[in-house]
Length: 352
Ligand code: PMP
Image (cartoon, rainbow, N blue to C red):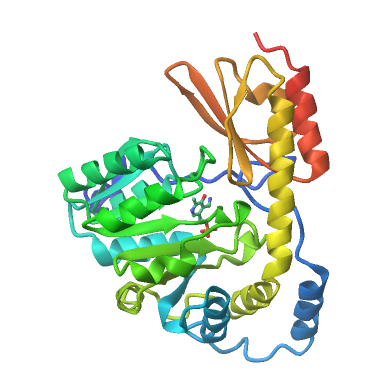
């Protein structure tokens, strides 16, 4: 018998799998999820639907037609400008599969969401990054790196995970106007700042906005994301869409959630205010810095280890370890009670 490892693709052994945090207990502020359950009316609708659920013996509708119609209406575009994925993770994969050939480059900022590089590599590509920035100068550097490497895709994450800040509108437009390749704007956290390129993305035929129900809509458990782009871009992306990718119940819940967009926008607004209050509290601590944020999380940096103080109170945050002597921890904005706990734990800590 051949050793199974010897049968795997060349290079796979050296690839780092993307490891999300494990689903253990504690105060979970490590994955930028919403702290709140679904609105009562959506839960009631689901219960009523389950009471006489039909057709779960059948495959779901493959084109997520009703859901796409409701997303399209929300953004003032046509359903043919939309495709849905099993989370935006699947859209990132579909986009890489469609546009990358062996050795092709994707360009990103660093640090940013790890799935762009991991997915590009899994699809036989490679990632080149430049230090993150938010203004026109950073946009030009990104464009320069993309051009130099003949990049096929630029991934812009705005607001950026894990730093939290969004690129200026002018900087994003500069990338959209000057890029010679596909530009993906990942707006996973855009609801927390209330602005989006979704409504104007059709002006740029090479650009794609991706969004998710996992963050501001509090539906990480149903795994639905969507892409908005020119019809021809959507047709291409759909070549990599597995049939029946979105489960029937996920389609329904996402559609009902889209109908409550105003409620989720107001929830996002109140999380943004809670985030600002948390940053204000943390500003009084002399041994750490809380970065400005446009998202539902805050990046903490320090010469000291931040995790022990959080863990001592059962708070789980995302630890990015130390680089050049600087430790970085990302903490999600939770309920007011949870945020107070984070503030209290860090204010009381005396790291050595
Ligand atoms: N983009 C960014 C920037 C993210 O932080 C995440 C989740 N951590 C995703 C995309 C993926 O989200 P999902 O697959 O749940 O839609």
